[in-house]
Image 1 (cartoon, rainbow, N blue to C red):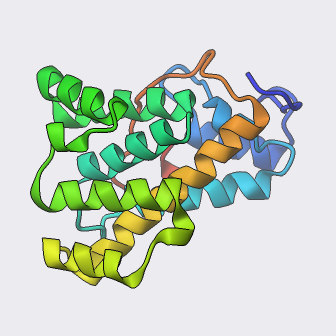
Image 2: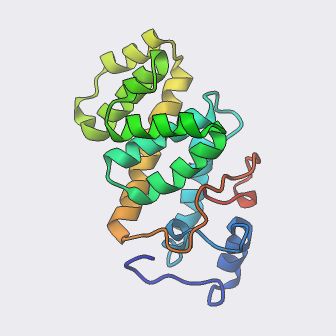
Length: 201
């Protein structure tokens, strides 16, 4: 599950147990990426809040399916199978089209997003690839390129923050040896913006 100790629901102090109750999946399970925070529950709360804000907040304007696509791309580039498995399962549900889902995954795994995307979505995926693989080489011209592709600055911020969040999540997983054993893959949070009312997907 993970290389460090975790606190299960039975041994959790009341506040942590209450958090577990709020984020548990359909079968009462807690995703391992969240259990990994149990020795420092304040970081669990921070992780949940960041995840919700960048991927599932009602004031975001870009489609959740495309934000998830960025997450799958970044996770693949970082070699994080855990996040690829979770978020590609979520992407399948959001797309509702297995054939399209297969094309998207194949393109991302091959490092050829142009096989599945064009226009401004392709420009965004090229930006997030550069940001993931060579963050020090990103320049203002790259942001200007996103504007030229049709994104406004708020949408550019959304793209940037999803890529940045997944860099954080990937390193949490890879640095602590977190596996999907026992996880409920692809479960998306409800639409509420209240962090206490949803679970990580």
